[in-house]
Length: 121
Image 1 (cartoon, rainbow, N blue to C red):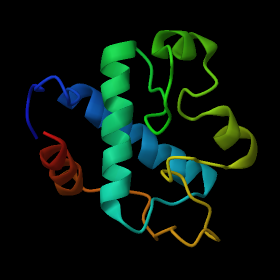
Image 2 (cartoon, rainbow, N blue to C red):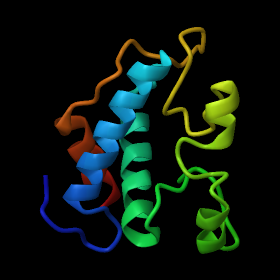
Image 3 (tube, rainbow, N blue to C red):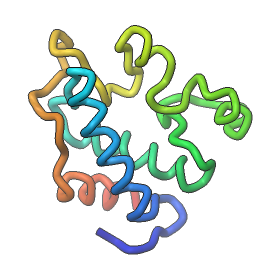
């Protein structure tokens, strides 16, 4: 993985932290990543980028008028309230086994993450 970002991507440190968090959270909650690993990779990259820029892993799949205010509100900080309360993940990062898009994985490879980063660079 790259050691630094081009401004559009996260740092390696944040990406590794969000990868570890996502894998552990999926296992703890009995949820699975999307059957398309590129979806999982893009969401993890977005969370890591928000962690770098905002200090918190704000959901990257929503539009915000004021991201800083949303971080302080904490509702959409991952895992967001809908995920914690009802296992509803708008980003399709954490999917229940009965979801049509759920895969069988609770881990993602560094290669899948890097491929997503390269597509976003």
